[in-house]
Image (cartoon, rainbow, N blue to C red; front, side, top):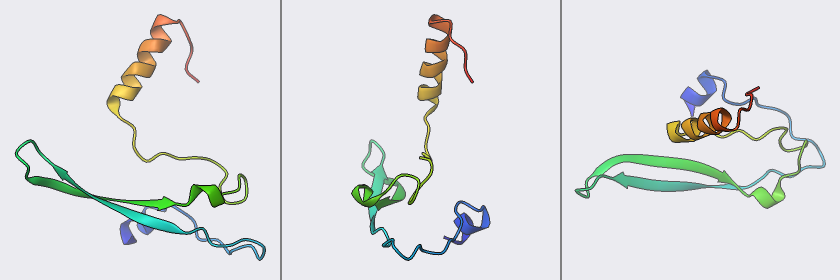
Length: 86
């Protein structure tokens, strides 16, 4: 948590008087290799999305993870269909 605060991942703001705090839960996973040995532990904090209100609880959606294959696929489609990236 300290490292996320240090790189300014989010801003702390006052809670609006008419809004409730959105609940969340932690998802914990063990990533194993082919031999069944634990390679790493992962933790993800998931908010209850059905309580979110656009432009009040969030203004934009941000994904922390993008795979290189996704970027390659996107660039491939740009080339094939002669599109422009903005």
